[in-house]
Image: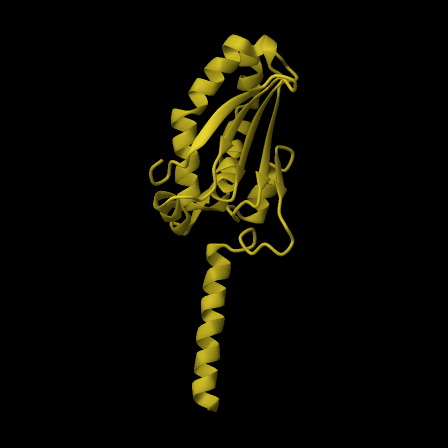
Length: 177
């Protein structure tokens, strides 16, 4: 891997007739850099995590064309394309799914199957998009988060609010003694 290029693998789930792209979560220093480039960036009418968007764009440019080519040549053996990931991989998978979902008709044509489906399954994904953007793709993206997991709720915005609260508390302590 490298910054903005999380490790991944592609597999075939023959019983489910699916091709699966799985993106690994944070493991290396490169992955941590991707996590930390977390400023909001406007995209598709919403706001997204800029580091994970860069990762999703890398996948879209370098990996998705190969998967589409495979689907085109083996469409009679496939009924769906699944993108999955954990943590950093889950956030990247969500944004990548948004990119691919915009081409679902092209994907169905390539597969030669008007019922070809696409799904994203995330496990403990990072918070990567504004709620309004996430809602546009809710039919494709399914996220599984433990209710007490802070990662799924922590974003650049909430981190900045926490910083403000801590600084206000320090200031109040200094003033009040």
